[in-house]
Amino acid sequence: IHWQGKSYPMCGVIDGDAVMNARPQGRGYTKFTPLKTHPWGTQGETTPAHEFHYARIDNLPADTTFAREITRGHGVDGAHDGIVAHNLMAGFCHMRNTTSNPWVSRFLGFVQKIKNSQN
Image (cartoon, rainbow, N blue to C red):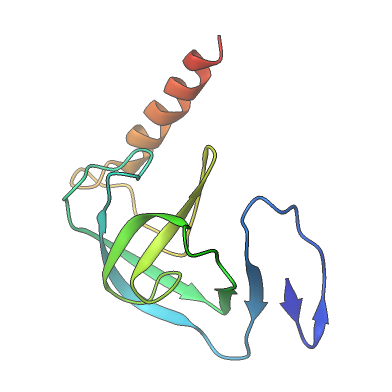
């Protein structure tokens, strides 16, 4: 991670450099469509969300797998959000769990699926 002219190591799960900025890189309401690579999303369903982040991610490999196509907002790169690496999905969009967007139950189902596959 790069912050105030200094660099610090992180855990290395995501290939890329997190860069903290003085101004927000993404702020406000977003909309995204889950892609087929989304670990627990429903493909093709437009989902409202929100983002507020001072970070950006530089030097992502060209073959980075994303889980979401951004149709409003910024996300990770202006067009995508939700970097998928192993069993991790990391992104800037955050959501409320509602009857129209029950993401918590979908996420817990994903966790259960992973847990069962390891037994």
